[in-house]
Image (tube, rainbow, N blue to C red; front, side):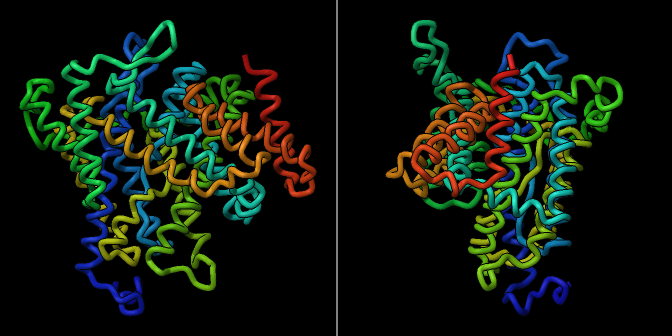
Length: 444
């Protein structure tokens, strides 16, 4: 085992790897709660049950997808990188694809499956790197920041800090409301923990906030800690059904945009995370990422497995850097994290205490982390600033990640050509311009 994971070459040990794997798990364990709440649209009232995914089944799918993806990453690519259903992509799945577009969640899962299969194909053929390189860096950064604002907006709504206002669209909520006060407490607590550099600060903040909620009588205490694993039957294999039973809903322009969005965001989430983690761990060699193809293959396989199990796109997590900071250097840390995700399946009853008020701080803080890319955009160049800015603000303002990407990708070729920099635009960007132009023309 030590030889396979190159413990001696990388100066690590079983203890160091275990601590690193545990730290990564604690840093991202919030997804076990946030993902089922998001995909089941718990925070949205007056919805028919047919639009909501089964909470228990999504919990199991989330844990299994994270365990499988992380295990493959650890054993195949040998990187200390953990995977799970991605924040932002799950919000896009639930709030844009299902709630706004009206696409059934079963069909949306098919879209995730298609994006994963395309991801595998692009990875095996080497086309993935070409597509990534065709997208200007500024737009990649803008997409990440825009998703961060989008997630934060959802968190503020879930906490009822931001509420509907018929006169000005949105406004400040009732800050004397018990659940809103609980969420505000959670935000302050999580900010303190993250500022102090506490490993697993988001997860710890959620736990303490839930406990305070139970003490205050705002949350009902769980009747048991360990229980039976929920059935995954409501979501397992459902992604395959629309392909044969209702292909007219699957093969549409709207679904093409959905698939491209899943694919696009996962592209850059994975690339950015792998580079960040490898840099921090000192694994970059001659400005290249060793075993990059295997790492990308692990990520794409995880998305396919996740879709079949019943969850949104599974991707690499930037929280893996917390595990690296704690000592993780090899894929053995990922094996440890995967094992902890499997163990978490038995603690489903505890998740009843995790309400939207408890998860709101996690969404807001994750948003803070994601907008850090804003500083790397060259705002002094107007031809760059315009598409980047419109990409960022369009996501929360239109409540759609896809719309934000489409607007930014439409303006980028226009401003660049007007500036006389048309030759710098990759041909693929012109193709995407036509795709998104068609999106606005034909989409109601």
